[in-house]
Image 1 (cartoon, rainbow, N blue to C red):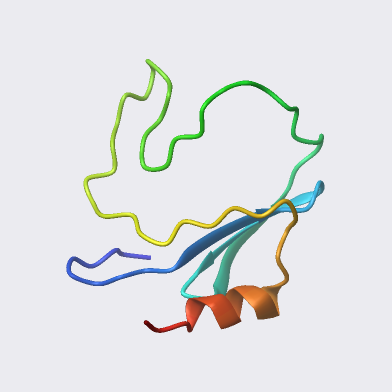
Image 2 (image 1 turned 90 degrees about the horizontal axis):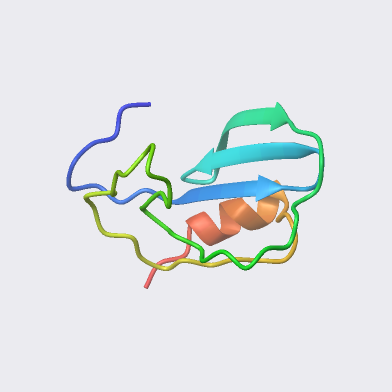
Length: 86
């Protein structure tokens, strides 16, 4: 997918303990099987930036309406959220 300037995108990532999924504008774009649960840690959460010296890159865009859930949302919920308008 090519990202266009001056256009908003709704991006959602989920992980249910087995599978990671990436949705763009409510549509599933990628899915991969992963093993292992998340491990609790004391690290800060960065959005639009990597906390790694190997990848010191920043997202040069605006990030708005960030939400984090303690569960993987279903596809229907992600589609519904992607269609919310202010």
